[in-house]
Structures are given as C-alpha cells and as structure tokens.
Image: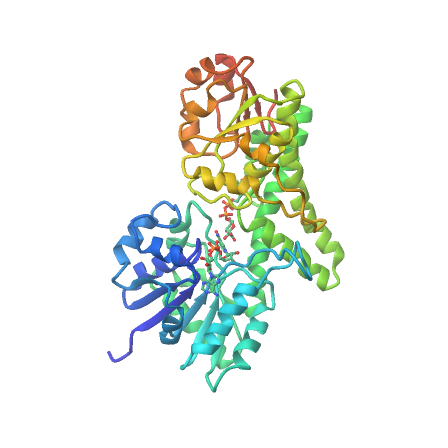
Length: 473
Ligand code: NAD
Ligand code: UGA
C-alpha cells in the first residue's frame, strides 16, 4: 500500500478542537493529527498532566494518543503547510461593537485563520469549517483563499460539531449524526468523500449525512435554536405551573411520552447557559434581519427573552420569599458552571443570578467542584453585554465583588447562611448531608433549587423552606 499517511491540522485547541481531534486520533491510528493554537498557555496545558478543560474521559483518550499520532503545538504555520485536511475550530463569539454588535458573529479569528492558511499553503487543501459560523461563511472563506491562492486549489467543507460539554467524548464516539456539507462539483464531492473516510473509521455510514454547504452551515444554527427553544418552552410552562399548582416535572414527563415530542431536553431550570445557545440564536436573528425576515427574527428572539425572564424570576423569588430583602444576608451558591461535569462558566445563568442577588446587597459564598475562585470573580466583575440594546452597562462596583467569597467545601459555603441557591445540577448536591447543613444555618433556612435535583419532601421534613422550579409550594 503506497498511499501516504493523511495529515490533519486543527486550528484552535479549545473545547471543540481538543476533544474532537483526540477522538479522531484515537480512532484513526493511520492519521497524524496536529492541534495548533496561538495561545501558548493552552498548548502547554494540553501537553501537560493538567489539561486545559475538564471533560469526563478526555484525559484517558489524550494520554493514549499524545505523542503517537496526536500532537499539540504552537507552530501554526508548519502544521498548516504539512496538512491535507485543515479543521478550523476557532472561537466565533458575538460581535461587541460595530455593524451587528450584540448579535452578529465576530469572524475576526476565522478570517485570520483563513489568511494564515492562504499565506503558508504550498499544496492543495481541504479546509473544514468546524466552528459554528453564519450561513454563507464558506463563500467568504473561498474568496479569501482563492484570491490569495498562488495556484493552489482549496475545497471548503462545512462539518459543524454537535457535541455537548460534559459528555463530549461519548458524543464524539457515538454521534447521532456527522454532517458534511460541500460544493456539488466533482472537486467538492471528492473532498466530502475524503472527510467521510476519516469518520467512517468509527461512525456507521448511515449516520454520515452529506448536504450542500449552506444546509450544513444553517443546520448547526437551527439545531441549537431548536434545542434552546425546548428549554425556554418548558421554562415558560414552569412559571404557569407555579401559578396553578401543576408540577412541571409531571407535565414534562406526560408530554415527553408523546413520541413526536420525545423526553429529552425538557428539564425546567434556572435558565440555559453555555457559550453557544445564546450566541448562535443571536447570530440566527441577525441573519434573519439581514435577509428581511423580521417576523422570523422576532420568533427566535423570544427564546432568549424567556431565558432572561427565567433568571430574573429566580432572583425575584429568592428576594421576595426572604422577606423582600437579602441585604447583608449570607446566601450559599451551590454550583457555578453552566451545567454539571464541566468547569466551563461561559454565559452560565449563575452569573446573572449572583449579580441580581449582589444588586440586593446579599453576601455570597460560592462552591463549585470544578470552578476556581479567580474564574468566578472574573465572571462576576465582567460587564454584561446587553444584546437587545447594545450598550455597555455599568461594571459591578468593587464593593459588590468583595461580597463574594469562593470556598472549596459545600458545608463551609452553607454555614450560617440564610439561604441556599442550587444553580448547577452536580450529582454530589443530591447526596449532601442536608440535616448537617440545616443545623448550621440561620433560621428559617431556605433552599432555592434552580435545577430540581433535591428531594423536596425530605428537605421539608428536616425543616427547610424549599422552592423548586415549576413545583407546588
Ligand atoms: P474556545 O474558545 O474554547 O477555543 C478556540 C481556540 O481557538 C482558542 O484556544 C483560541 O486561542 C484559538 N484561536 C483563535 N484564533 C486563532 C488563530 N487565528 N490561530 C490559532 N488559534 C486560534 O472555543 P470552543 O468552545 O472550542 O468553540 C469553537 C467553535 O466551536 C465555536 O464556533 C463554537 O460555537 C463551536 N462549538 C462549540 C461547542 C462547545 O461545546 N463549546 C460545541 C459545538 C460547536
Ligand atoms: C449545546 C448542544 O446541546 C450541543 O449539541 C451543541 O453542539 C453545543 O451546544 C454547542 O453548539 O456549543 P452545551 O451547551 O455544551 O451543548 O450543553 P447542553 O447540554 O446543551 O446544555 C446547555 C444549557 O441548557 C445548560 O445550561 C443546561 O443546564 C441547560 N439545559 C439543558 C436545561 O436547562 N434543561 C434541559 O433540559 C437541558
């Protein structure tokens, strides 16, 4: 067999690039995978025992492949120039200034990656969009590459990633589908086949779908919009449940039994968070507006508005039930990450809840098993960008930030507290010794369960006043 070893380079060693490439390396021993990044500290961490992200199962995969056919490097140019297939998995955050500020995707990092590819390539390349991008981005990238091509031919593919944090490795090993969009030309079809061959090492063929470029790009935004829409729908129902005596878990269970609706993603919560749902829906809204479709834009806006409403509602519930003031009261915050099994705090609902409570002068004691104090302080002191009215709001005052104490033990966090807010569904919060916690708290002792994970009956027997999302009082 004389075929030469396929080389893959991935630009961007983040939550997507790192795990995705680690799994490709694991499943394709015949392919050499290099993950490159401009962040020296990130690459150093990928090459150390302390990986830059916490993700169950990731460390085992990285340890198995690193140095064999998986490499992490800051030598971006070398690895791009050697690669046959280049994945671009850089960040694509919401623009904070200029045209489309507050909604449109900021493609600065994407464009600089594309220009770097154009600069250093000496052979034909397949360039794969892994980042989530606005529909039609491939056209822009094609322009940048072809106008700087020096006779090299490029094929652009869209191969969006659907993994969720906390389950990334499982999602990558056993994806519902892999989506590959490409040009409907012979060259485009050949490129699709080359990328299909990579995934076919472990993904059954009927789960590898190919489409045109625009369908693939748009499907990613559509998938996230539909997922987030389910959460806002059930959260909207949770408010009505609280007003009527219905129980949102019972309602979710009942409607989820309809096979057309299905049981997943129907957990009412304090609100969805994470780096993507809000960003991608805002991006979708902007694209609709640019295409003269304000009704469609407004439809999706409501998904974010209901999410903001849910976070506000939670804060108001805490303050109102604690006799309309939390001023000077210690409140324990259990969980700060945007979901369990990750240390990621990007857009976590905990930021808005904590800021809301600090606005009412509470004193917060925060515990999360995977998030450091520095990271929490940084998130809380950062300006919030208002997507609806793009202006920078007042930063938190230094005194409010002083009212935040981060501790490494849930019993410490809750000692002498007036109330507890559960903001992340970490499994360990289900099995805490709540009697011990109760004994050391101020009375009446309140629990506000933003994730519906505690046993309400048991806690009420101990003596807690318990509020859950969408549950009868
Ligand atoms: P991230 O911020 O964790 O990682 C991006 C990395 O790209 C950073 O380390 C940054 O230093 C690097 N980078 C930026 N510009 C670069 C350049 N020119 N050259 C080299 N490196 C560069 O972001 P992420 O969470 O991995 O997300 C990446 C993309 O994937 C986004 O578009 C996101 O929407 C999408 N996505 C994310 C998830 C998720 O769960 N986080 C899931 C699916 C899709
Ligand atoms: C989400 C999607 O699930 C992935 O398919 C997608 O690839 C990814 O976004 C992305 O594009 O970045 P992720 O944000 O990592 O993944 O995590 P999710 O499990 O979707 O949770 C998002 C938020 O919704 C979390 O705050 C979670 O607590 C909340 N959620 C989720 C609920 O409140 N209720 C639910 O029923 C499910």
